[in-house]
Length: 458
Image (tube, rainbow, N blue to C red; front, side, top):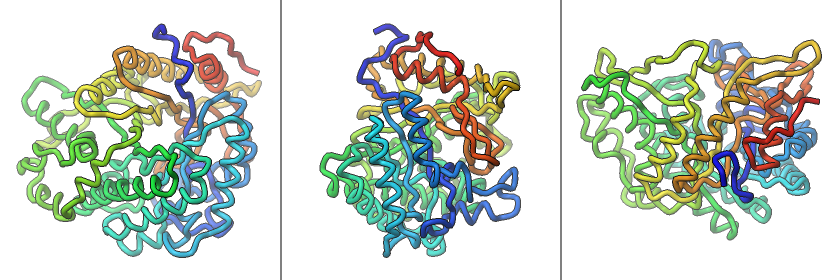
């Protein structure tokens, strides 16, 4: 295998999430989610939009399965909407919700596409949030019950399951920084949330395995290399802190059965939060969290470069030109992916890996002839796939790659302003139009080769 080719068994896919594409916020018995509530809060969403309609995938899923088949991918990673299945988070099932995913899975399999199901991609039922949400241990049990119910219906056909997508974002952006639903700014709560997410992962993983004996279950973490802005001791210390909070706070419990000791001992950076971090940890929790994974999903977009802020805590700095950033303001840094994958292999007893999200936001729109020429996205994807292939050549057990995302969609607090899709979406008419990147990715996915040249716009 050259660095431009991938093994025949390597999986090429695309990814989405329910809250970002489904719409139908009040259709077919769905309950309110924390993102429905958060988006209705004045000032929460940059363009003042809501996910009420999004890409209308709830009603256009057949059309979207056709897009997936035309894209030539091996697999489709999507999430289930917990409030669509259990409007109150627990108790009575919503039959219409289960029927929707039942039909979607059947259609994917009929199209020769393997479903990769994510149980939680941030849309907690508001009814559970009203009881304390992820800050309460009871939500972890409710999640395990929901996971068992989903596996009981779909587990005869779905082999690959992930419990949570990006617990760092849920805990930090949603409960410490207030940028995501539910919009809280409470560092102590964020620590409880992080622990309960990991605990609920363990319980849900066990529930899925008991319900669907052929299931392979993992979790998806967003991970990033953290570089100091200089060799100054303060910057080196800031990089250690952020690496601990962003990466090791989730990797260490999963693979070592403990939280990072250096952070727990770091009273300069944490103060009394070091003790608060362990207040909700009960005997047996960490042993359960460290149960072996069948695979680990890794989401990678960019690296972090930090300096010591005025209070000594990490502060991000930009080290590249404006024209080398995506529309999210993120540096294009494919070298970081290779470094990250090699670090995982070196420092942790990792299972097989999937790159479960990787992509770039660029605002390219149709030209006068209807073509969406997004060469920057092609360059981004190609560079990161090359980095992944180099890591594989050095022994990293990477089994697949999922581009983010199939469609332009509701990009959380950014609303519809940031476009990650391989397909351009007109959010007024719901027209889907393939970008050049879709044609390019089809050639890569079908030929398992980055030097595939048999692609053209139509």
